[in-house]
Length: 460
Image 1 (spheres, one colour):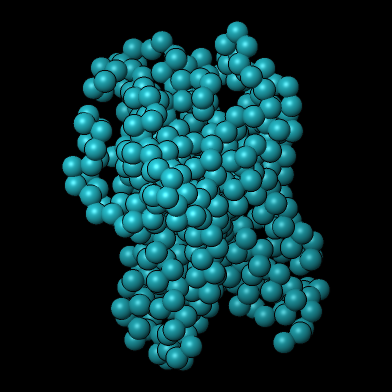
Image 2 (image 1 turned 30 degrees about the horizontal axis):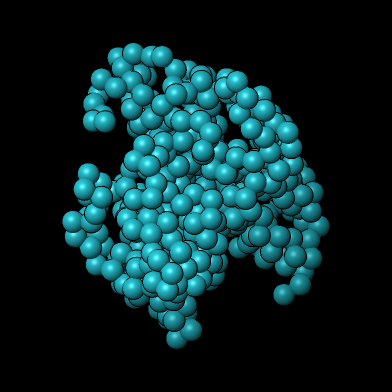
């Protein structure tokens, strides 16, 4: 089917995709920043060192900004389940509605209540009580991510019920919540939030170090980004491997499309992995490809001769779009590899004594690498979600409910209008975020001093 601007289902999918890609920026930042702020504040409470207080206080302003934009951008995303995908809401709303309600009443509410105390309580609460509020904000952010991943992973590997008269009948809520995909996707997503935030902070710090601004403050941020970014990126690769095996077991069509793999390998024949290919879906082949023998079997099954289902063994009407997810996956892997490389280079420079206040500014290539890598850390998150969501197609509830069958009966003009309005709003919100961020960065961290009554330890 050729998608055009007159296809309201296609436009609804584009609108949901763009809304999701814009929204996901802010939860990624709030989760990552909340953990960073919590650790910095914990270090301040334990040691009494002012620079840790300045770190926590300074970055909490960016957290508040990202949280506000996350709330604003999440509203149209949630509304679309009713306005654009009413069939999906009717079929699954009694279960997904409960999951989203739990997310709102546990994660979001917890985060919102304690966020007010965290923002307003720097000089009003004791340091340890304020640390508790920050911990609750972090817990709320992580809980929200958990329940959102419960909903999405259930769409990937639905368990705990069956379709009955066009409605998903729940028979086992525990199995539905703890579905197979959740066990690998939640750790993978949580690490993605932390990794992306680490490299964004590293990029911001590198930019200031290149200009010799607040060197002591940003050098500490940069070192944390190097150490945490390297560790997190390596862990992310490990959970990615587990995720790939889960996809091979539960969503073979997604795996085959992600790898542009057409023919199921026979016994004793390992499946080759295509580093590069140009899939030709019409003729069921790759017009161009560069393959490495046995690697796909190793990646998917940890066996060089493991069986991998090819696209030819999957009905045409159940195959996801191949080119988009093939290249999305490779962009994700490429950016992840760059992050590991950046972490290694940063660790090497640190070990050689080059990351000191006197010498850090001279590491221009390393710092420039981190500056350019900062936005690509978010690209890695985007492409991972593109592969995850587009790879599930044509199913909105894998194996049970097709996406096209759940779209609301709208006109292309109506969807196009709402899409245009969203794009204008997204551009405006992005401009506001950049403007406020520049103002905060220009003001710098110097104005943050701890309150006089510090009930904190004085350990070195």
